Length: 127
Image (cartoon, rainbow, N blue to C red; front, side, top):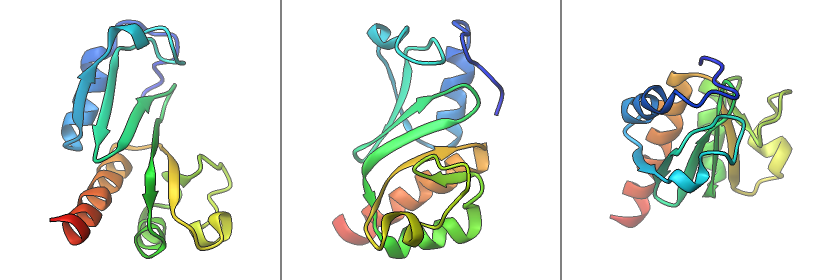
């Protein structure tokens, strides 16, 4: 992902990253000066929020249950980082068997994988 730190002209590109992952987009102008990237664009998916940081996404939500979090980590653990940890620990190691409620995502593929995991959980438990 490109480095957008301090940029104020990247709303279109940020929205496109969310669109590719099929994450709902919201434009909240009052947030424009709130983070590393000066944007009003955020994403929302089943209680998860997605905010763009300098060259990654920060996702926070109600939690990915361990069985799903471990599968996500096996395939994408170096680009979908548990709790944003640069050492890329496993969910089991970092959260001791509890749900993962925070990730930093370094690639478009990783963003799509996390969104797909959230949708899978939602479809298996709630629909």
